[in-house]
Amino acid sequence: MLRLHQHVAKQFTVMVFVLVCVFGTASYFVCKQMELYRYENLLKTTLNIIKSSIVYKSDFDDYIKEVGKSSNMRVTLIDDNGMVLADSIADTEVMENHNSRLEIMQARLQEYGVAVRYSHTLKEDFLNVAGKVQIGDTVYFVRITTPLNLVMKSFYIIWASITAIFASALCMGFFWINGFSKNIRNEVLKLNSAFDALANKEYKKEFRFGFAKEFAELGVYLKKLAKRLEKRAKQKRKYTAKIKLISKQKSDIISAIGHEFKNPIAAVIGYAQTLNEDENIDSPIRKKFLEKILNNSQKISDMIDRLSLAVKLESGDLDLRICEFDFDELVKEVADSFSIAEPSREITCEGERTLIKADAQMMEIVVSNLINNALKYSENAVIIKLKDKVLSVKDSGIGIAEEEINKITDKFYRVEGRSWDNSLGLGLTFVSYILKMHSIEIKIESRLGEGSTFSFDISALG
Image (spheres, rainbow, N blue to C red):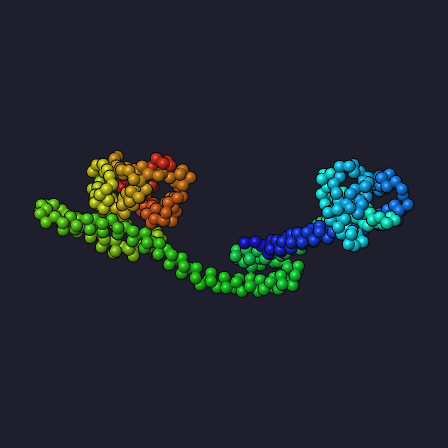
């Protein structure tokens, strides 16, 4: 979409183009016709002089050649039967009968005959004017011819002069419209700056409009609008900032924690489907599956109970429920639940018995988020290792650029090119929060196209 000053320039250009086409075409034909008419009158005047003097000449051939030489025109004398008696340029012996020539035919009926015709003798277009003259009892026709290119040359000089004058006027018009367009552009830029200032809440910024009354009126209106917006913005900041912040925090945490329901629910469904489809399953296995269902159902119940406590995690007021447990067993249990939920994926889990004192449910969230993150961004196997009190989750996925590694645990940060996902937008943030509550730092190693390794040392929890 064009700007206002561009519309003005465009419309002027179109108008000028149309004027040039119309004026050029019209002036071309008018000037050409005028020049032909001028030369026609010149030839008629010369013809009258010849007609008045030829009656006194006895040698027509010498007279015709003399007149043609002095006038720089071709002069031809033709008898009443159309035979060429004398010509100032061509040999009369080779010239054909001229009785059918248009100018001769017209001269028989009226005072002058005029025709523009191509001469096969001289291989050129000519303007021909013929007139009848009577010498004694004999009728003759005198024809004067001038090259058409001579007429056109004179015409082009005149037409070029007129065109040059018109072009000069157009140039002046372009300079004028450019200045007019520049003034409009400057006023529009001022308006844009004023709106930008309002958008950036720069309500005190001054603008002056003066090119046209309409712009000045807009400037007055913008000043009034700025005052109203400033007053309204102060009220909004005063009464809504705190409510908006609290609402957003709660919404973000509920969205992230709600994501953690996915794995235990998937495990419950998986074990329940197995029991439902296989009625002859061994009793020990049935009992084990039922225990798994019970355990994951309990996890869901615990998550629901602690959903309200998630807000405290955001604010730093969450109290950890410290207990002693085997971290290796917790890691393998989480890995098994993912294996059931993702039977097509290869999840390798290696570990050793490692007793720690920590909040078991929070640590389970940490492990679950790391495994889930690895599965989402890698189509190959996910390798989980617990060795020398260091847990690492390794994938062979798309990797993370070096400049983004320190940012991915920021709230809502998403690696460039990845779609929205709570595990990445908030999951790693919660991992970082929970580990910091246990005085642990997460370590991230990654290369683009080679995968990532998330690890942390739990020695301080032993």
